[in-house]
Image (cartoon, rainbow, N blue to C red; front, side):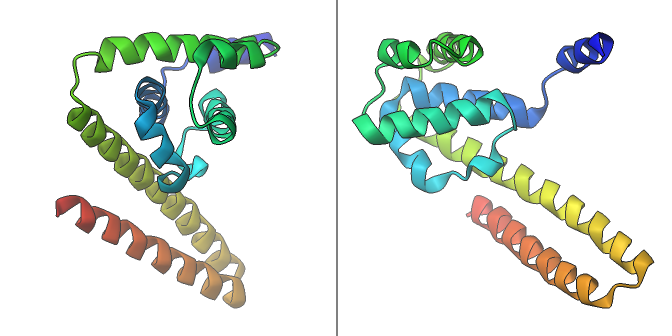
Length: 168
């Protein structure tokens, strides 16, 4: 059991994980951008785990107070040291990565990250639905297959629209 935990934590971070952290770091650094996330970001697009949890906690905190006071937030999260550690690491990352960015560059980076996270999420969902389609075909479950194919088509259209929008 311990060996599995070690292996799990020693895996390199995924692209989704890195983009999640970069997005959160930017939102923490430029709180004007944070207000966009509540309407433009689905938590499902973020890498599962601490990043997703920190996003939820930041969103609640920001919604209640209309600002992010990091020291105050760290006090609220004091009983969750992993979240505090992630918050501190992201603040340092943000200062290093975005300290020289103009406001316009930060907005462009935020838009790019949101689009990439959504694309990754839709692509992952398409793969899951495609696998479910194969399973339904093998079982001969026509009703399930019809439902899954509709879902697949909807996701495909959304991904296509997302990519076309990116090219505009």
